[in-house]
Amino acid sequence: MLQKWVVSLLVLGGICSACSTPQQTAMPSSTAVNPTSVTYTSTPLPLPTPTRTSMPGTTPTQIPATATSTPLTADLHNLIPTGKAAREWKGIPVMPNAFAGEEAPDGKSYRFATRGNTAAIQDYYTRQLALLGWSFVSAGIGDNGNQLVMFTKGRDVLSIAIISIDETERIVMVMLVLS
Image (cartoon, rainbow, N blue to C red; front, side, top):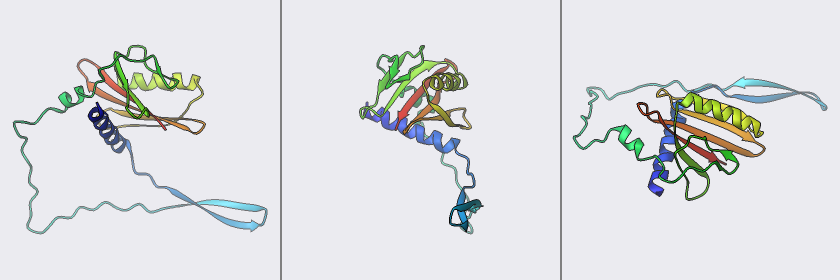
């Protein structure tokens, strides 16, 4: 079971990196006009320009897939929890049509499987969490349509990874991570 959680967290990390878009960050700087007045300005930080280099005389090679390769879909099906889905986890609602779910051994996350599409699941959580006092922070969508959505409430941060497991059967795994 721990192996499934590790794989789930790796998938979550992949979603995070797929969803992130480099953005310039502004560093505040201040100029004191007088002891009681401070003016803040933003100074954009330069971002490094990606470059691609290769060794002279080398040609990139492609590694052919082996006969023992497992399709990604089959690997993702192994991430579907095997326990019965809860109605809620630590005060966070679990979607009503969830058919399987389980909490991580460390108690910091919960994942469940449901049927639907990623956009409808994000909409559900945006509406339900607002009713519970959570504030929407950000959302990112990867090239594959998987999503990462973040909310805050006081000092708590809730990250929700919405991962399409099987588009034909519309199976989606949702991972709730509370920190």
